[in-house]
Amino acid sequence: MASSEDVSRGSTFRRVAFAVGLSVYGLMAVRYIFAASIVERGQRWFLLWDDAMISMQYARNLADGAGFAWNVGAEPVQGFTNLGVTLVMAALHGLPVAPAAVSLLFQALNLGVLVALLVVSHRLARVLFPGVPAIADGAAVLLGLYGPMAIWGLQGADFAIQALIATTAILWVARAQTGGQPVPLSAFALLALGVVVRLDFGIIFATVWLWSVVHGNGGRREALTSGAIGAVTLAAILVFGFVVFGDPLPNTFYLKATGNPRISMWATGWQQLLSFYPGFKGTALLAFVGFAVWLLARDPQRLVQLVVALVLGQFGYYLWVGGDWVTLHTSRYLMVAMPFCILVLAAGSFEMLRRFGGALGGGAGRTAAYWGLLAFFAWSLNPVETLREWHFASRDPMYRSENAANLRMGLALCDATAEASRIGIFWAGLTPYVCPRDYLDVMGRTDATIAKREMLSFKGGPGHAKWDWDYVFRQAKPDFLTTFTPEMQRRSDFSALYCVAKLHGPKVVVPVRKTSLDRLLDADRDLCAVRDYARCRPCDL
Image (tube, rainbow, N blue to C red; front, side):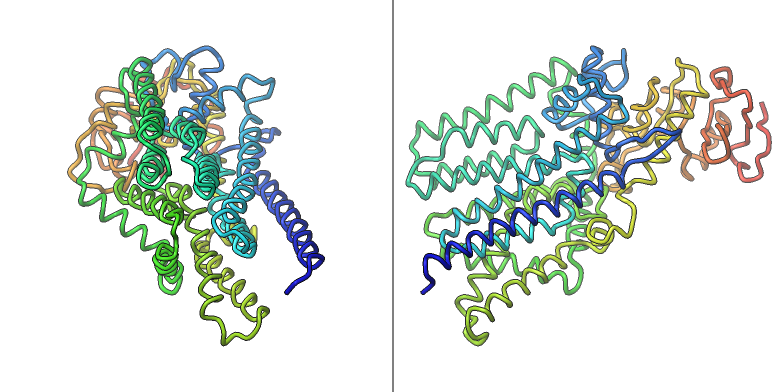
């Protein structure tokens, strides 16, 4: 038996190692933030991924007194799903900071969220598995090595914030449950804040509430009060959407979750999910299932049941919405579940080796096997591109090249187009943030006409499956477009209506409507026919 001095020495070592690990994690994050930034025209821009920049556009207009608007003065459309995050971004825009640096403040905030998530996940493991600090240490290390969480957080996605809220709430639930107390209302108040952060966090709230009704040591009064917290929060958000935007639901709900064949959406989501863990890496997913079943059978307080239910709920939601349009670092929609998934992997590995690891010899052999298993899970859970981008820094941060192109596009548009110009855009975040104009989102995130279309196929995937070129070219009639696709060029009306203008060199080109050439201010404009752009033949005007 270890002496109290040995226990104290081991505890001190764990605290020091944990602090060192958090410091290394923070340094990696700072490197990533600066690697994602871009210097253009002598100014360094700190940038988020484009979807987060859409929220930044709404936030800046709100801070400037223009209301919740993507286009100032236009009919409001709720093109964001993260009300709480957009409000935080608006508060950041109220500080005396240049637009090029506001994203840095939000990235710093998310870095604090990521560090707090590691701390809270460690504490949750200590409560769920008391007296076994190795499980908490393993879960924290594995979560710290999980690159997608860090990348999505530092890129400005709101799922790290959701993960922290969910993990903290479950920590409070676990403390109450182990003490024989009802689930505290503070946990549901925190979960309600998660719904404000992002509307689909309601799945997490509903899962915890249903579990608390069955296993939460409370009575009818507690169930009704906690349920009312969620219902009132949801109702308030829906009323807010109706009053401000004329529709209780976000525009992206219609874009991604309606108007597409449901079977095709499920099939796409399932295919994506399987692609995250191909071949031997699928062992990680199978291990989660196996460990979960085993831990559930040995869980008298049903807390592991809640953890597993949260994971299954998020994976089920991912399938229902048809997956995600960006899957390079696993889907952002799964990030909320990953701290719980990792906790099950760490706990299951330790308990399995403790029970069946007699052949490994003494404690040292089982410890080595435990950390070896966690190393395998770290490799399995991290996609190859994540290892290159986050762990080895051998590739640029996600969408850095696209951000650079969109930044140059925005600066060029401000130089070369009249302020009254209407611009059809594909990347709807950064370019409008850089250059105020009247924009048309041809992909429908901030356009209700496109978002509410009924489609016969799911071609293009989630969020990219709805297009309406007749509406774009014949009704919306943008003066400029920020790109042109092969599908656009195959249309006779596009070739008849548009030519191509080079702005400040051959790398910045835009289709310009032939009737809108007076809105092109560049004196050195070089007009080319759409169908013969490679040869740069002058337009037939």
